[in-house]
Length: 229
Image (cartoon, rainbow, N blue to C red; front, side, top):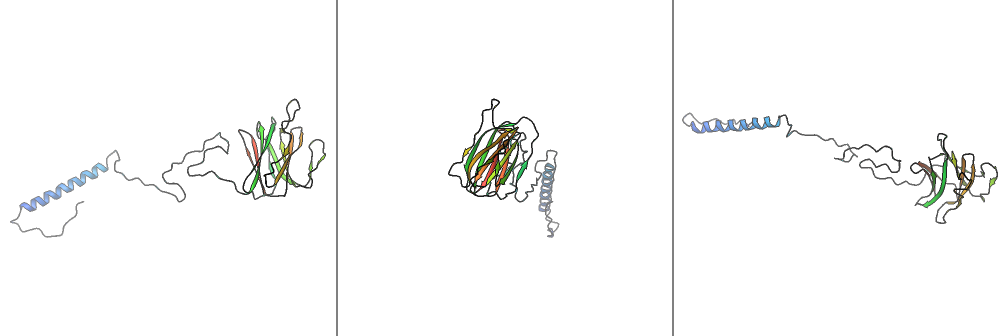
């Protein structure tokens, strides 16, 4: 609405300016009403939109659903989410994960890598990731024969995989074990301690008993074990 003036109008003899003033006010009011009508039209043009931004949420970033059917380590991050870099493991408690019985996974190899605060051991599989139990032991006994494994006084992180095999249908081993690279800070050897009736036992000999972390992945199947150093 146009502003209203409280000034007294001139005396009666001066009529033309008064008419012009009133006419001007009428024109302004009409334009104002016309503008309001345009703003209230069916198209909604000129209507205000309100965006509420929650602290910690990137503004103007639409939420998108996580793609399903992809492995956990390759699924695209949520908007604003940076890929996490794992820190030093903090727990020493045993880790136990069961999987439904079925076709055994085939162990195809063990890989090593050194990080700033931990050694990484990756057990690769052909087939589904098997169930696994990972825990520190002072003695290691071979699966099947029951013979003790000579650890030479070293602590050992025992990794029991089930159902799993480490041999072909012809009986040839698919992985035989071996020393870890000298560059690692704690893990010294991966020992093939058993392959019997769907149970594979791997011993990770180490210099000292430290915290560890276990993560299983699929497509391709693998178990990642981080051992602090």
